[in-house]
Image 1 (tube, rainbow, N blue to C red):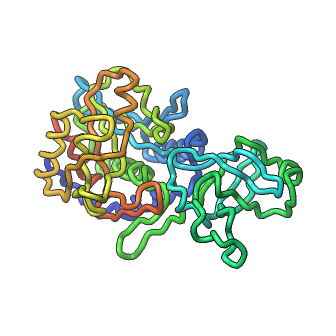
Image 2 (image 1 turned 45 degrees about the vertical axis):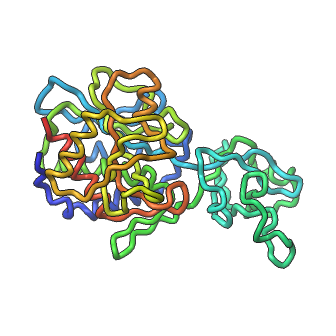
Image 3 (image 1 turned 90 degrees about the vertical axis):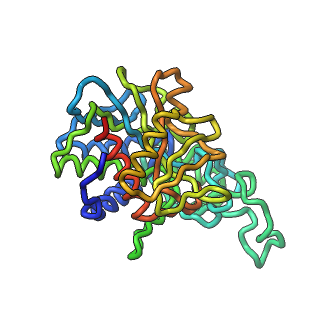
Length: 350
């Protein structure tokens, strides 16, 4: 199926949605605000939206043919941290939520969100933070045992911190540093997978503006526990296919770039559905997209979660190429455009 939409006309919408979602703190387990924002976008476009008990968002788009129901998914939960303990001198030890590359967090600005809804700012630092004091300032390990959060409040001890209302289990949000460059790069933490979520919202915008209906009844699914392995473990009844839209891997012997849509044939959990993956390759070729077929060596997706939970669906995985995943990530408009075109082609095909 040939895509006729000029996706370039929607570049502003794409980056607007990306900045909207990336601007909402949503580490795994604290995603309600991001899902509510997606629901507001759905409402503005006239699509039906509902939430699962677990907090995932679902947008229903009726198709031209009722004989089949498919789902496209992206996840809006991100990496983050939680307060693990409070040190005697008033710093916060932390535990990771998901798998951030911890050395990239050295010097990052954060917010600490208490159970009472109060936010405090701070900075993640090595416990040897000063080169003029510590001989191992440059060489000390950057991990959760050797880093802590310095709070931007007048605290001198553990009791001072407790009096602020900060306690173990409070979330720590990382500043995503979202930037769109004049050359078309999206730079930010958490493009995995809010970049893909922005692509799906842009597709909904295109469908609304151009009165496009998918071939089959379609669920746009925004999962919230993907980073911890069970995002799409629940699926609506009657689905026959799940296309996960998640970041494409870049590096080592992989062929994907930031300008491509990546099609994953196999990840660390095993191969994706052969027929569905082949169909996606053929659609990319038919639409003359920049694409790459790759094997992801250290990766899992919502398809894996759905299969592990026993859902009887075909599964495929695509997404824009993202550099430096789980660190300071980057992708390009072209990679996102190619992803949007491939999803549109998939939804239009019989």
